[in-house]
Amino acid sequence: MFTISHVRGALARLGVFAVAFLLASCGGGGGSSSDPPASSGGSTSSQCSQDCGTAIIAITDADGDFLTYTVDVVSLKLKRANGAMVETLPATTRIDFAQYVDLTEFFTAATIPNGDYVGATLRLDFGNADIAVEQNGAPVAAKAVDASGNELGVVDVNVTLDSRHHFVVLPGKPSLFTLDFNLAATNSVDLTTAPATVTVTPALVASLDLVDQKDLRVRGPLVSVDKSAETYVVDLRPFNMRHQKYGQVTVHTNENTTFEVNGTDYTGSAGLDALSAAGAGTLTAAFGTLTTATREFDAKTVRAGTSVAGAGIDTVIGDVVARSGDVLTVRGATIVRNSDGARYARGAVQVTIGANTKVVQGGTVPAQLATPGAISVGQSIEAFGAAAPVVSSAMSGDWTLDATAGRVRMHVTPLYGFVKQAANGSLTLQLDSIAGRKVSAFDFTGTGLTPAQDADPANYEVTSGALDLSGLNVGEPTKLFGFPTAFGAAPPDFTARTFVDFPRLPALLSLSWGANGTTAPFSTQETTSLVLDLANTAIGRLHFLTIGPRVLDLKTLPASPSIVPPVEGPTAYLIVMPGMSHAFHDFSDFVTELGTRLNGSTAMVGFTSSGAYNGDTNVLAARSIVVVLK
Image (cartoon, rainbow, N blue to C red):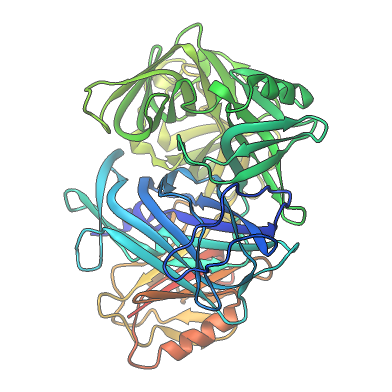
């Protein structure tokens, strides 16, 4: 079961899957679906004409240690105030939620009736789920079960909005609605079983705002280009899907938008010319932001043709865990093949590069060319070439990718570590993880100028240039973003472009009270503050506060933290009960309802809260809270 060493790796930093609905009037800047709205199960019988809006639905996932969490999304229905259910998905969609750490992806552009929406139902099918977690540096399979230990099949996850914050769709008025399938709060991992088991209590956290702001991605085949308007239109096709149309979306560009079309780089209008020349049906992927007021998606980067993973060329996406000569080892990778789509490979993927491999280093505008020698251990990459399984039936085993005549895209890589020394222009870390993988997964042999200078996780040397390191204190954790030093050229081991210091790292508080729960979880329960009673004898094995890589045992703190709402910004709070969840926008409404539910006969079995922790005041400003009652 869980130990302290497992908490951060298997629960405290598990992902959050978010579905965001941006509703605009028919014909708005986001485009509209070419098909009529689907409906079932008591759904509305009216067809959309003038009284409809376009729901642009997007998915994201927070920083986590699920290496893959792939399930089938069967349907996503919105519930109207009159009880009618409106389907928003045209077909079953298979999604790996673990792939959405640093971005949000547009899911569907569904045309739905205007009106008052009071809830949602997400139907998931775990029958063919592919879930993997990390154990001792290696990916291991995990089985999804319910609270009784039974394997999960089809599961309906319901959420009801609080009475003061219904989701209202009006002509010409955009509305934003987010749903979080909170993996941290609703998944418990047991690594002692074979295979590992993930106990799932599905729940959706709903809010009228996006709680997390990230880059957005829009994928799909090109429909048309309008150079005078600096836009192009795609048939939305998310998640490496090879068929189906999920509505149309207009992508806005400008003179600073960078393009990579079939492996060649462009900027601004030249990129639109190249996209137009590639022709309708060319697969595209755009990365950018959404302007809510105008309902416009603004692209910073556009990739098209063979520059898109799996489009005409096989692609490996993952992190280099070792390198020997011109062979990169990527373990726990996503393989997207041109012939048959995407899959997760738990084994080792051997990527062969050579003098003719084109290497591009991202993170700058435009991206910079690099040499094959620049790719070192710890680097996050996309490699393009020809992929093949080592054993033909090994869907998740060992693979090879020949990129000697292909390309490698080096991505900005995140790492966690504890500060050992900080000075102008450099710091030394006790390295904890790279790109969410524990350092035990990496073999740093060959990274140094000499074997004695190979990168040492216990003394990982970082050059930081002109970054202000005054906020970094010895012993505290930090998160850095940058690139490992070219292979065979360390020290230093890593070049940091940005960092996040301890006070700004995300914090997650997790507490459980065993199977029977407790009817008195709080020592203070007010509309402005909650304080958990750490003297409660029913507290179970989870009682931790994690801040980046640091794990604090709540029971060892001088006092229980005060949990309060943030001063500003969006929030989302959820009360989970058997068969139903209730979502709240306001902390005071959430606490009031919680007080009503905790009537002496109802017990709380789990409490999870995420936000910003202030160690000086012992206060957690919670943007999200999930409580599980029985």
